Image 1 (cartoon, rainbow, N blue to C red):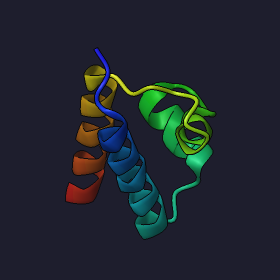
Image 2 (tube, rainbow, N blue to C red):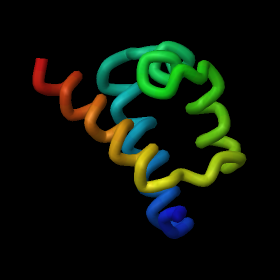
Image 3 (cartoon, one colour):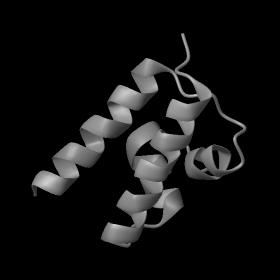
Image 4 (cartoon, rainbow, N blue to C red):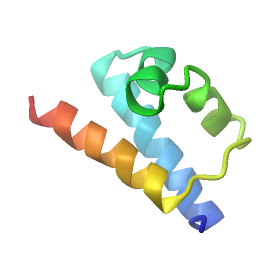
Length: 68
């Protein structure tokens, strides 16, 4: 199951905001969260549809990282 396009765009914006705020490289983020160095690139190119499972995993990482 995929979330809607609008939600995909909002999700990508959340990831971009996190990267900007933390200064983390997109490749580092992709490897840390999804074991995929091209994860953020695919989000940016809209080549990847985001499942709820993926979104939950990414958001859990962002929340945990922000809590430290």
